[in-house]
Image 1 (tube, rainbow, N blue to C red):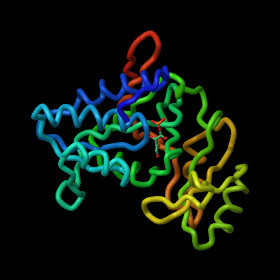
Image 2 (image 1 turned 30 degrees about the vertical axis):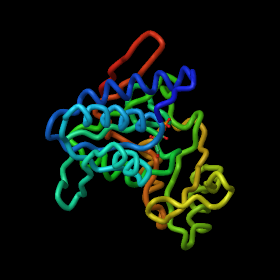
Image 3 (image 1 turned 60 degrees about the horizontal axis):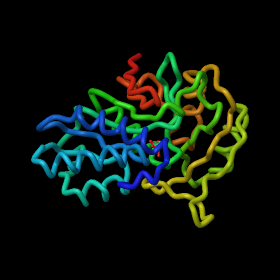
Image 4 (image 1 turned 120 degrees about the horizontal axis):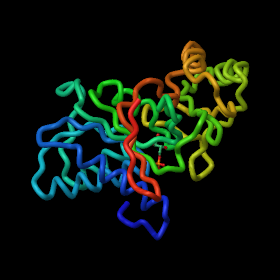
Length: 233
Ligand code: 5RP
């Protein structure tokens, strides 16, 4: 992900990613997020690794693992490193005020949430277009569900007011997550109570995890046209 192809959003994503990568220090255990902004962050960490910085990392997707390996970054697992110092990841929407998030349009939400939950600091990197008053206004809530009985799970989610689409991959086949599950994109429109919605979704049998990240954010680094901003809850 080294080309920005003149895309102004890509330029902003890269700025936020580089700022976050500068927080990584010698000896840290680092969570590596997924998506295009995280890819810039991994690229920058790869550059710092080549300069001699030494740390180890737990990736949130096979894709991020592959990118990190290509840079020679040392990957570890929870077996040896159950506590992560800093996790850096992108987001699809950031709610101003609460800094709650929607994540998972890239399909890695389950591992992303496990890594975020195991981290002392969860730093979110976005360009300014991701900031919203209410989650769900522009993007659906991705929900990872078991393939067994998914039709029943989907009906129960619909009963909460969602219009559901099954996630497909670029070839039009059913999207399969790194954990072998499927994703339902749940369109709720603007969500006024994301805490309650998160609870209701997680209470449904068959739901593995949702893309609502509630109360997990330590800091958001926003790259805007007038500079970088650091938001804290
Ligand atoms: C993947 C994610 C990504 O962090 C999210 O989709 C943001 O992606 P990008 O940085 O490409 O805009 O949650 O599951």
